[in-house]
Length: 396
Image (cartoon, rainbow, N blue to C red):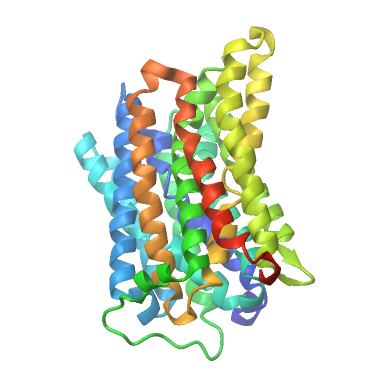
């Protein structure tokens, strides 16, 4: 059985990542059942507390090198199991304070799932890092969307079914990753304290990929948090189901982008660069087109047009994410890979907290026009990425 899992390492790790990251938006999907009369500001609180936990966790991982010093598959498994337990405890939360604290703990656990899962994908598939990460981030996107889908299947009224299902998925992911083990010859880093993650920014291309990623993160999680609210402006039914579809379509974007980044059977930095810039360009255009369309379109057709734009946006807003991770991975030493990616994630998610706060705080005032707040992210990411990779492009 273990050999079968190893022979299909990309698929196994991707499925485990999907199951583990289903913890991410579980609170958002059921907040109306757990906290009646919740508002956009409450969504902002639990989303940002999850991100705060994730940021804290990634900083700890980056500074201590825990995910490099210990076997990555075990770190992933333990984090998934603790996250599953914290997710179930939300059923007993009877206040925003308790719910927020649990979301913070779950965020800590996600720091042991998402970047560590990326490391596992790269060490198992070093020659095709962008393709592996395309599948991995695609499954993360599907995992992010799953709670909305589960809530839609539960009729939108049963938080228990949704949370039990998410926890069961996270436990299954832990079992899969623990069972797959690590490639032969894999060595842990025995350093007790690791500052090399911070030194990675001295590399021009790592820095360019990271800055592009930071622009991407200004947009991504705020968009995901906004999706149910944006859909609600279109006067359509089944908001939970449509939210699942709009977020989940990013899975396809990531996988297609991963294949587009492969040239002659191997990862191409030039192709990854191109995929990332096209994604930033299209998603940035959606930031502007969506609110304009909602304002001027005929009411009869605005729902269809709005959904079409959101689907394009959902596919491209995240299709650059695996490209950034692959480009960063390709320009940092492998013994510090997880720590450097954890640091990059930590900074990126800190940026996301800012846009989530702004968009949720001013949603009632600006409504669909709030998407313009997201526009600077893809613009600046597009510029930053070009400065590091477009110069001396022949060597990319």
